[in-house]
Image: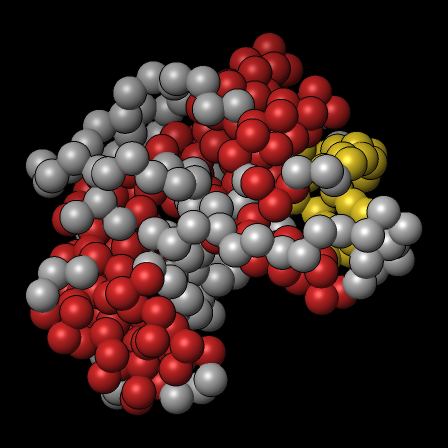
Length: 307
């Protein structure tokens, strides 16, 4: 069995991603972008990008990809992504790999997709997991394919959840169990088997990238939301995992990594085959949104849950 509609799905994965990384020296551009002054954002970023700032280069790629502040031009966007990717910018590596994959340059795309998958980008994990399941350009590896698809689904990527359901029909139970164990290992940050690398400078130690919703803030420290009010009823969901054990392992890792989660209580809610990891309480929607912003800045998928 082979997954169909691959190129259409990859196109969807690289669409609708906003330019929001916020290293201190590109913050003026980020502020302009968030105020919808896209031309002003580009004016702030371009000289920094020309001088080699990877965040600014990535943001320029986003501007050309989305046609905001500049004419839409995927070729120019790709060139900016490549400059940032060469410096180890994980989100740029993911976008570059996905564009190349969509264009049919799959052999050239795969090393970048591997890098982005290793850094935790859910979109790259989805594409690499599909390749490993089908044996496209890589040796077929069903346990690793299942693990990567589990991680991408847990980050909230709907295509991955659909593919995981299909994999359940074809991958034997023993190999699925190996995949679940490997997904837990990935969730806790334990070392995994080394992946191949393109002949580029070594990637900088990086954050885990978020799902295909908004580009995570790469170099800035996580914003500190106001302390949650214990009587609040709002919560945020940090992912859905293949087992309660995997959800607890992810909470242990995230609570160490993201300071804004301090003092919050996790809950583990069964939803079909998945266990939702939700945390709270939070006083109101604004507090939940601030917490999600902090989680996304650290590379973790997140959305608010109303009372």
